Amino acid sequence: MATGSSILVNGERDATEIDMRIGSAIFEAKLTEQNFTSQSKSHVERYARFSEVFEVSALPQTSGKYHGYQLIRNVLAANEHSWAFYVISDGRRPDLLHEWWTVNSAIRNATLRTRCGFLLWQEVARACPAPLAAFRAQKYGLGDGAS
Image (cartoon, rainbow, N blue to C red; front, side, top):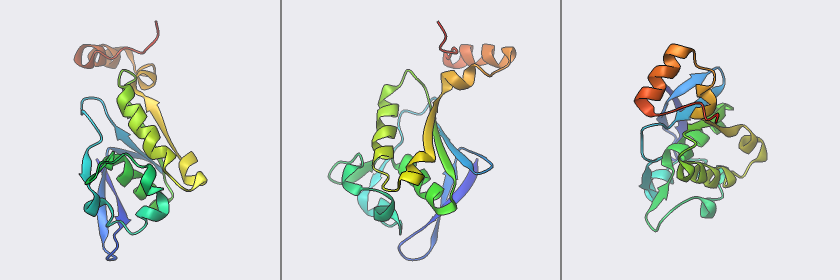
């Protein structure tokens, strides 16, 4: 696991856990976790560039929480470091893809928005060697999506 950071309103840095970093690209990988977590609005709004990076009213939220917190935090880290950000999600989980596209569409800056995207685990699976493909299929029921 790698780390990135974002600046908070008080000038301190917040360490962001990143599932994977390859060069200037960071990744949030969802395979067995149920969601992208939720966090209180007061916690999320402490990021210095939060309302500059996002159209806040367009983010997934309830009265007291923002949903997709891991996505929001990673987009803020990508913005801070001029990184690209990708979500890797299971194609059998359209709810996760919907949440990602809701967060992505709330990104104000078009350049940052185009540096953020997604991959499906099924796409990644196609590139796996045979022994890893067999393990992946047995453990996660994850084929390559080709039928």
